[in-house]
Image 1 (cartoon, rainbow, N blue to C red):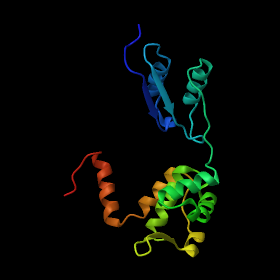
Image 2 (cartoon, helix red, strand yellow):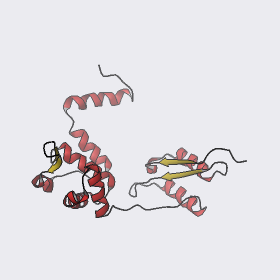
Image 3 (cartoon, rainbow, N blue to C red):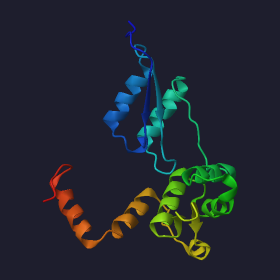
Image 4 (cartoon, rainbow, N blue to C red):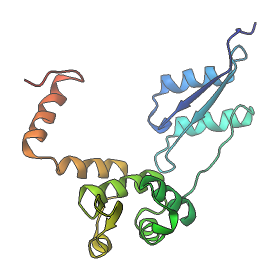
Length: 182
């Protein structure tokens, strides 16, 4: 019998980290004839695991899944993304976008992170007087951002924390996911 529920959409990010029990549940959900559910899953192409690969192949063979590879963003897409982030016309961001493309290889997450880091490091700043973004072109050419992996980027961010904050986080990581700072 079919369960009388409205159709659902489920998005699961970073499936490469799913444990075997979660993958087993995912298989049951996707192959269920009782549910009307559309499942989107994202996987980092360089971090997959064999159990997940096997599940995806099986589901594709059963016509329950389809793989779609999302590649790097094009220069035009990067420029549109950057211009939207900075709330300005794309013609104002084309030069910056070309530099960002070279430094991020068109990865949307890294593009966002790169722009945020430019602002954090005062390479890119908003001039309230001129009502526009200003970029230090000398600094941006030599600007380094560790974009090897998400893990490396997080490590870099943690290393930049002041010692007191780092100490609090270190202590908190031993306590659990809920605590009071007093």
